[in-house]
Each structure stands twice: as C-alpha cells, then as structure tokens.
Length: 104
Image 1 (cartoon, rainbow, N blue to C red):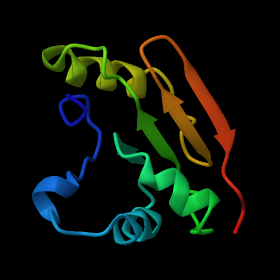
Image 2: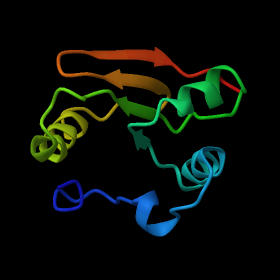
Image 3: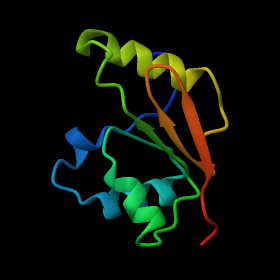
Image 4: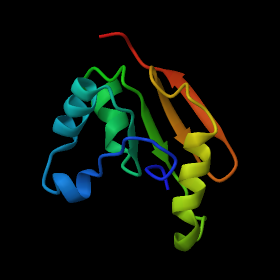
C-alpha cells in the first residue's frame, strides 16, 4: 500500500531477515528512512542505549486491529502525516503519542 502510494519502502524481513535492530536503525539513518515497526526494542536502543535515530521511529501497538486490517490501518496512519522524522511515535488503535528523539 505504501509503495502503491509512491513511497520508497524497504522491508527488513525480506531483505535482511537476520539483521539486528541496531543494524536496521543504523541503515535507516544512512538511508534517511523512517523505521516502522511492531518491535518495542527500538525504544530501548534510543532511550537506554543512546543510539542515534533522528530518522524517526514509528512503533505500532495495534494488537486489537484484526490482522487483515493492519496493512490498511498502518498505511492510512503513515500517509496521513509527513512529520515522522525526529520523533519516536507510538500508535495504537485510538492515539498517536509522539516524543522528540534525542539529538545524539
């Protein structure tokens, strides 16, 4: 859905299935890409370990959204705004919470 809307998307599970989260984050920084994830470990990498992440991280916590509806839900949220870089955003079924990423 994101590619169909003209966005450049790299899917780590296909391209780098064994990559560590830190390596994926470093690649996102190099390629100036926003990390879109269901994995809460990215918050630890940034706020506990201190990894740079100005590229932006969007964490989806949408367990209550039916699996068949998740791709559309994710695409609609992401396409709905363009200010993801520079923030750690947590999206659930009802809210978007955002926090500025530390400048490291």
